[in-house]
Length: 286
Image (cartoon, rainbow, N blue to C red; front, side):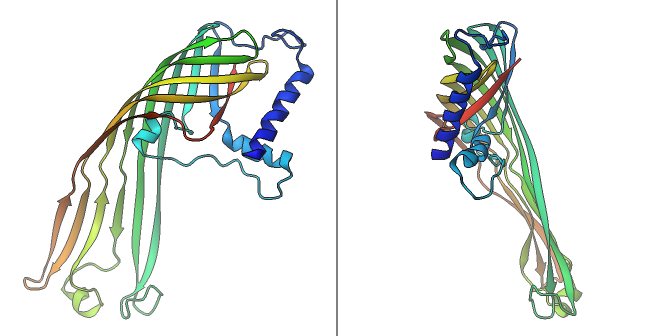
């Protein structure tokens, strides 16, 4: 936190070295947004961590890595979506239309070697490959809102409301086995008779939110500001049931059986603040 304070203080000091009195720079550029301007915003924390280390003399590794994807619907809808792309269009100097979008996909896989003679994970004479593939699902969130602004100096206050819609894919895990469950493998290749999962699917989540917000930003340079925003609003979500596909060897009938089990659907709602900690943002206007 100390690193961030030092860096923000440096920005304020730097701003006073080039700005004249009033709301234009030495080059005559307008400092505050005007009617017809567009703006894009970014989460400032990764930048503050990186440059703050420089001001504090921290000798550890500087990094610009940002927040990871969070598929929790309330975290997304309550304005804590640090990886959302945000934009504004200024109808006039005191009114702006806001929009945001968040789209994410991901996954991973790993292959394990198994010695069927001993059951060890170390490769051996009868080693086979078992593969696990994970799909993290997807995150799709869109939002639209109206922002009203107050203030005639570099320090601007604003307030308004956003409506948000989110669709979050639950993801899945698929298991591919090097040895099938059949009579030969069960008897001679060390495959233990029983059951094993072949696929696990998590239910998708649909979420809605209405969020009121209030914030403050300071223009450290013409059309460039840093700010903080806090929100409070209502969110609700509904998550579909998860499914697990399983196969097992029926020793009595000497055949492979497959079946699927289904979990429960869930739903939730909340009134809550939309920011945890002091998340800052950087906004560029043009």
